[in-house]
Image (cartoon, rainbow, N blue to C red):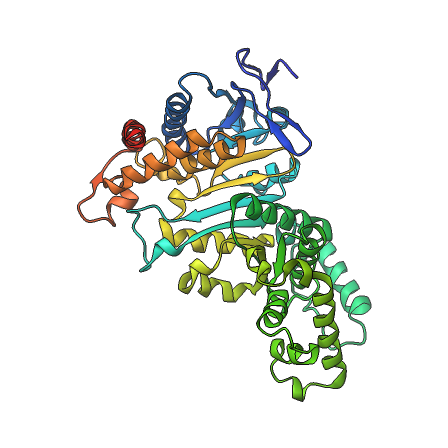
Length: 475
């Protein structure tokens, strides 16, 4: 371990978080790097830090504490080191494994396109986790926001975010279009317009399966009942369609005794209802209109039914499948309307990168918006928890912004470390504060009778309610 990063000595009173065999070894005084963030990040980090420290103190009575260690990225790093993302900052997060950050600006004028994307790629934080749930009292544009309680697992390193693209009119782009039109598309009707920009959408077996694995593991560990693969495979058959295919493969290969696919549940459920049901009859029930299908299709479906029953009826039949985690899939555009109309039918969503970006914000809009939406970027043995909103520079240093996104990201961080008592205190106290209608301006303007408070005051009320929460829990 280096003695310092970015010239800042490593705290002598803290210890590193360890990682072995897929599990963290968390000391009672872990060193946790933080990046303050740009713009409003300064205000919301100060408020959040007070909440975190108070929760740990109240939960563990001094037996545990976080040893915070500042590292630099964004505007503060540029001003200090003339570098938007110093190597030392990345090395410090890699050394101490778990970090938390405020919002970072997107550099203008070349270089790093996105600091957030750069951190994910450098540390291979392949999974973006976005839990979205309703807290009582939060203003919402929908009638039943309480139905929303999903965790979105978004692939974080591939898809269009890989940044493999060429600008229209450049020599490389012209050369690529010529190669595609004259070689790869030769003899077909498809041709790319010569005045196009070109982007590549890579999606791999590796990237997909490790993402879906993490989503299923979370469902099993947290008692959630479904994992939904979200894709646009009806159009993008070899990328998004492959995501669906590889996701199902991973689920049934690695978690066979613990999961059932939606289609398997139909087959097994039909058999449960009628033990005398023939394979052909079962096939007709899962594929309506079979009488009009060509013989080859009928034979394929009957073969599928027989293979499913032979493989899993002994372990999944007689209602046992109902106690398994259901793996299903939905088309991406369909899921947008379903999370509005039937949000309570979904629990864990596993998505490619771009779909997850859209869907997580659409879900967050129903339960208070990005101001209160937490997030994390997680890999194997490394994690960065972060505000999901932007820097809002015009509000910087005015002590007005909702710190909920960073605060709830801290809740995620404490749960990741196994410090659930501190996480519970924060979450319960934040909800109680909102119910009391002591809120920042973004909520106050939507809540009749609410009292508008500053960022720092909101944190103060949360801390006060921790005491109330402890007393209420003791009764």
